[in-house]
Length: 581
Image 1 (cartoon, rainbow, N blue to C red):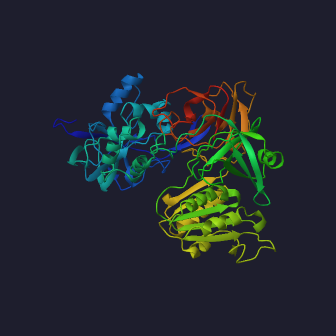
Image 2: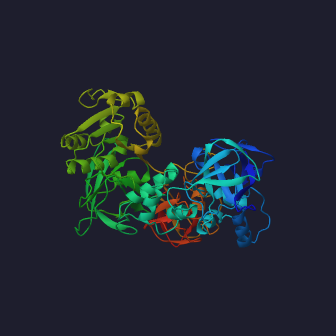
Image 3: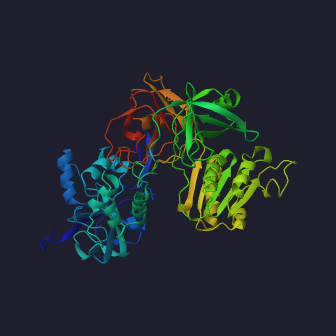
């Protein structure tokens, strides 16, 4: 503070993104900042001379300027026993005297030099602040100690200089501080009243608003934090249980359906339309298959394409009367309630989960407009043709469109399919899909990428397009460039001697190597695609279904994951485990 008691800008810091070596990998980051001599221009997207390495998490209009306080410098020096901090140490653009996180409100406006700023959100912590601080715990500590720092939006561009007074010109719409809002998202105790209050602050950035809306929309039965990850009800049972095969039926030349029931005839717990079942068919053979039957049925039906060891076993060896070990239904790719139109798009065996959604809509005699858009190679390889037609006939506002990429001579245009070729933006545009529709897509990864882009191009908002991919989900490794694709494999070196760890989606089971720090580290060593950002139990990007087994946390999560899930960044197996990865 200066002599008048006003907050003061002590340093303006900028830095261009650079590559730094971290754990044998190159990380592209702009967190290294250095003080500017003289005035600097604050512009709509950043300070002149500054840049961000990951625009998905930093930078942009809502996060143009990052602010951190000298008061927090002093706090962390004492807490960490450090005396080596320099200006810009926390990756901030403005080092300030004053403006503590527990006093500054979201929406407060400040005049600094010739520029006008508005507070938009707390810092979103990620592992790169840990790299900069040489303290891996830092992303969690910033949240737990209520000292995240905050971002500013530039309302009026202008020059700023070290030594400028910081003059408050307007209060935020609600008495919610930066520390309040940060805790509301990341720490336990998500007060609905406080979330609604936060959503009354117009200045709160759209990303944080979306997180808080997801928390309000979270079903009561669902656990976890819907502001950070998709939330679903907890699994109906833990681990695996035996289910008896009661039917095996062909659906196409490559796909068969297997119906499972409780051996004693008890109705199975209801599954949500779009969820999947994980089955264990032998040592190391753990696979997940979407449920294709009517949701709420007393039995489960999975539909399996013949490809790989597990599916070949199911196609050729399984017979009625056999017992298969199964985990409970899971998955967040589920039909959302509402009155908006529904577009169900599938490629090949991707028809499986969206067929379950179609069953649900037909059972409700839904008045929603429903589009069934199915792509397959040929009529012989198209599953569920008759079943889908029957369900669509029960819906008053249903439309069907079938696309065959290689129709056989026996396939008749107008009877078996509507067009030859692949789904494209031009083709989808001819369907005149309603722009307020919710679209559900399932198929191979390339199919999902192409069709998602095509749907958005035709006018559907990206937020209304929901996808389910075959196998492993796409990786999220912020700041680290994509490596050449490798199939998942056992880690290099001598095999571990610990309990088996199965990555169900990636078809890999390996013994736990005691040298690995976490399940995330083991997954990376196996080239299993993973998603993460903080690596210390804050962001929940690594939250994964724990299909079977138990874990021990090396660092307690800041906010626990949903029941039946695990934060793999800070967990080790406590015995045999099966993960939905």
